[in-house]
Length: 186
Image (cartoon, rainbow, N blue to C red; front, side, top):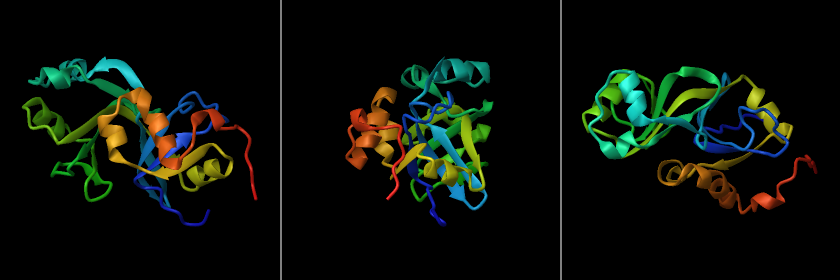
């Protein structure tokens, strides 16, 4: 695969991927470099709302609309820690700038601002993240575990969870019914 950079791409789990953490998922890659990759599964809502999360962390949440939104299981790593994917990037204490428009923040200050009604234009909240060591993601792609496509943020920020995987496949022009768990190589 060489030195491909999959930052700001979707990973679409292939049917052959039997890992229960990732089967049937779409992940958004926030960082990919020679040290590995970090992303968020964006189509696994938890049985928790933002209102319940904010209550647990003792931050008042003024917005009833936000209070009803789901929290997502972002991956199997650090599932006790919150990750806020947002646009615009803003100026928070601990933000990974994914690109000019999107940031991933892990510091409490963004949650406090959201609680006071100062919500970023677009927002996705998860507990946990998905991580890959150096070369691991590239190897999984070679093994036909993932399809990749450049991300469209409307898929993450505007579509319901159940529509995200089909929408990402549609970007590639693929009907989910035609996916195979067999790898093919030219």
